[in-house]
Image 1: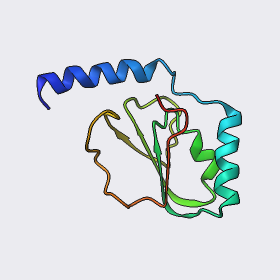
Image 2: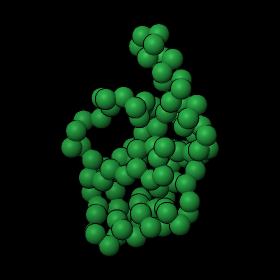
Image 3: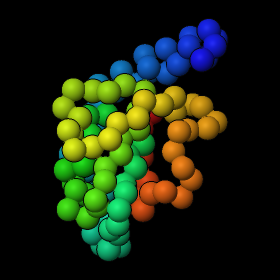
Image 4: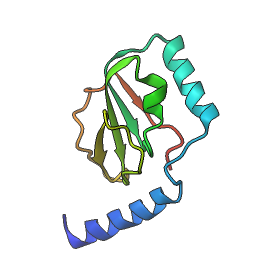
Length: 109
């Protein structure tokens, strides 16, 4: 990582922390209902801008693996989940294209 990319990522982290890694319970329920309504299930869910990983609770019975992607690893992230620290502004992320059965971005800034 170059100095300029390190500085840029620091800015992303500051913006991410402004959300406190939280999302509305009503919105989490809405996402869970949509996943159920469309009968989405499978091996992997990727939660982009995962915050504390609350979406995991809403969909854990439908997926084998939960992967949280965010600039910050917040406390309370599920122990059974896999966390990847990423710069959401980056053009390339360390995730294999097409490897998720569901990709969600819930209230992601």
